[in-house]
Image (cartoon, rainbow, N blue to C red):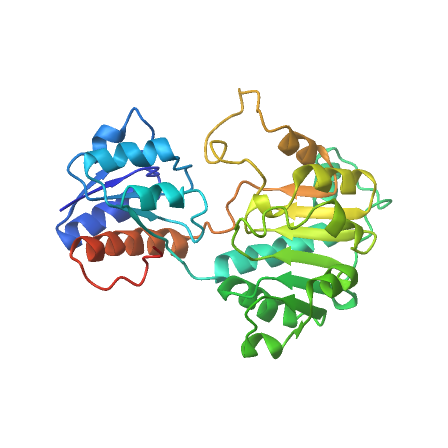
Length: 327
């Protein structure tokens, strides 16, 4: 058995992959680069490949299929970066790695607090020896209504975390959970949009909810609403978000994900001119915190996704029941 791993970070993932190779007896070939047409050959002899959020286009999937790859394991919860139709066309199956919810849930609460307490501008001023108070007044969580869109494992944990702050919590999900009802009230989307002071997103990106936050949905929100996104950038129309921030309809944002981030994260681009203009505009705003898709990034997550993705590949190659396979 052989598994080819792409996007392997040498500073935190490599040792975990070597450990799994030793424990399982499976040959694991690690490549630090994202999969592309120039390194497809590394997967020759591999029935499975292991990736992160690199865009898997039809061209790439066809190329891997020709080398004999039948399985793609992504070390992420979401798998919208993989062309499902192409996988079905070329007979390739896919799995994800639904790591524990605590890292992202903790990060979400951090972004909420940073945004409502204006931490970005406070820190910026401090760096310039400006210790004035004007413009830095924040709000207290207990006085706010927080809307949580998506109450899967992460959204549910966010609700539980927020319950300790004494805020009113509204939730929206197609599949409601009794555990969430202990702390939050389920409402329809329009009610959540119109009543929430802070809205946080915890839903996968699908064709149906692409740009669920747009000019029309923003118009339904409270003036000065705060938006938090640790899910997928495509949930929010960047142009509509920027317009909302410029008009002060949106009072602030905490974004760990942005639209069109593929190929941008996780590389050093300090000497490059970025093609994603929206990121530059958002990062320049004093009331917007943009981090680089790292809410997941904890010691526990790093270990878990490596182990689970390799176990998933092995189960597939052995033809056994596979809890991580999504299609």
